[in-house]
Image 1 (tube, rainbow, N blue to C red):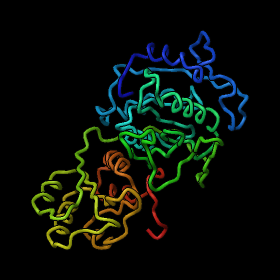
Image 2 (image 1 turned 90 degrees about the vertical axis):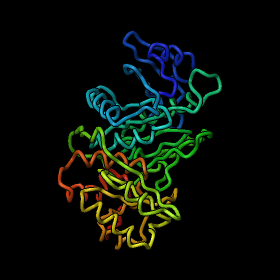
Image 3 (image 1 turned 120 degrees about the horizontal axis):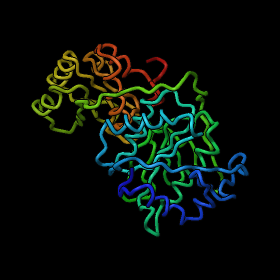
Length: 340
């Protein structure tokens, strides 16, 4: 999935014009990276080969919907045993949503699933696609044994980010993605830097989950002067709401505001609180919001909150059960203090 979708045959033909991505091919469709590409990686003399598979009727990423996430997860699940890792080419507009969705849909992952793309397409001479594709392939091939790499992630501009911790931060720069509350998993500079965390290798067989295909979700961002009618209409009829509060979680002091939140949660609306700030977590006004049934989102991203809500809505019909799932750190999407 790219911003300018093309048929697989056309893409492969273009791919092979770049010596960084192609040294030879075999009759089975495998493409081999040139020797010397993996300097700095463990066991760099091992040949790395990859196969390109296309999807039927590719779309621009701005047209993504939840059923596309489900279809993509199904495709990976069906081919999971065939490869050591997966690299998915995706348009940048909704890439962070897809990487987050896959982290909930496929659990537990024991292989890397890396999304990447480019700001300038592969078909233009001055592009960032070659480096992003090459870096993704090298990480998926040579670092697939590292537990922190075994999961859904996003690679862009020499950095690999955890898939449910990444956001798009620029519409113009090659440094288009960032992870405000978690360091990159891998940085490909002069040296290959792997920022290993305490994640242990996953146990159990891979399961494919489902998510709500048409979740009625809202994003309610506070602003000075927000009125009762606006908030009421935003909450009315929703299945889930992402409440973007001030700073570390501050809310208006008006009684009507907290009363509307309480009324919504009592009617079965899941409300998760997260900061409007790019970096940091919510911790202010927690008791007041908790009394109204609002869930503390800690440092979760909007992208992860959207996809987690869609996932939770499908896992339980019970409102309390849904609330408990939203409070838990399911697959590394947020930092939950031990006291919580």
